[in-house]
Image 1 (cartoon, helix red, strand yellow):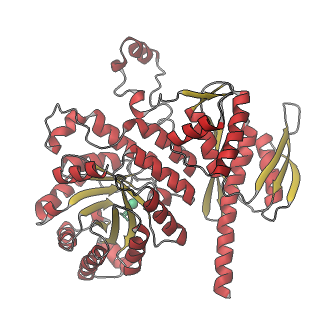
Image 2: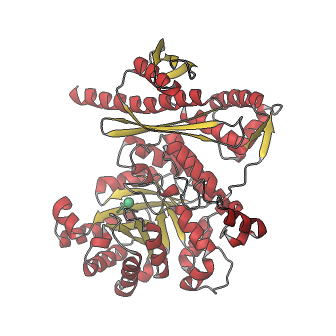
Image 3: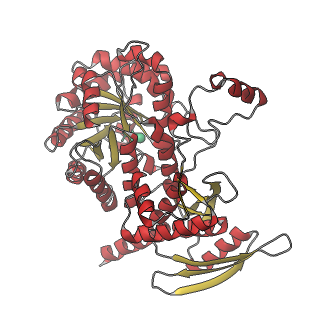
Length: 539
Ligand code: KIV
Ligand code: ZN
């Protein structure tokens, strides 16, 4: 992958895909991931074929540092993607990024500073010339650690162009190999953004020494369109996230960009100096991994994909109207511009059954990208056997649901030991739950509710006793059929923060209880860490 990336870079006729799901994507409320979840996503991103993974913001917290370091160690191999850490244009940040990236064979420091007048005046309280000097000095400092340095002038879209050109020229002469143009507030339109990129190409004297990258938010729903216009005007790196998750309205969605460049490659080819009819892919992405990656990110972050979402939404390939169905049956191309197979939507083979042993189970999970400890594997295998008793044929998606479930319930603080409900049209929904507390004590409580899930959540609340508000609850089935696994995703709010929880089970009441306990465990971990930090500061 690295070789292909270098080829793209030097030929400038391919598009570099820079994934920031684990950095900008993780910045959206409730999407926070633990280190194992980040690693799982990073491995899948490598399988998807992204060229650069922005693994986090190493200086932000010890947890972020550890995640960047672990991803650098495990995924940043010789033929793996470039692993990148974000760093403000501040020495301590850059140093932390460099330290965390040490284990990566191909590491990149991405340093940034705001350049728009509004940010300079109100946020940085610095003059243009001060920021110009800082940008140059900090790129030089980052270069003292590694060769691959990216520089972003934050809020570039609202920066006065002449000043932006100067900042970029200085950053490139200090050694930045990629200069990234962020639409930080999601304000620009496609033609304006295209013009900005063309202006940079024409007015920054040393621009041929750097790759032009774009980064953009989706506040007005134009991020993907803006990027595609940027490509036509010279951008060769796209910073994007899976399912478009990210700060506020999110970032440009990777799957939409990649599929637009794939399906419409004949339109884009000439802008990249290729023959219009060239079939050569424009990116290194293995499109068959797209659907799987989307599901993984959605499950682990708790950020649901809207059904009508382009490319990966549940309805993206469904034809409801009679006229469309009739056309598709006669010839798929009448109403379909891409095949579901192309994004891996149909790769749901039946792989295992009741008689499959631990070895077959372990091997298939490995092939699907799950590296589990023996304890995790043993627990997952029990769940698999249980499922195989209820459901004869187990597919890859079932296996993924089991494995994700195991990995997510890894950080058990409260452990769900028992859930029992009674409900019906003439009964008052009642639930009994038993939880094992962090001290190892087993506590049982019961509650009534408006429905069985409400009763279960009230009973759990009586044990855990952390006031919170449930803001989202969703159930989806993993595969078709009455015996399918149900996946429950929930989001809850505690004070200003949002926490998500996800769980899978053939019994959706059990999945609901487990998803809630998983979210509460995340909440509890944060509260516990805050308390520890406060005590150590007071001591
Ligand atoms: O949106 C933004 O400007 C960013 C930068 C740090 C690149 O995320
Ligand atoms: Zn951003």
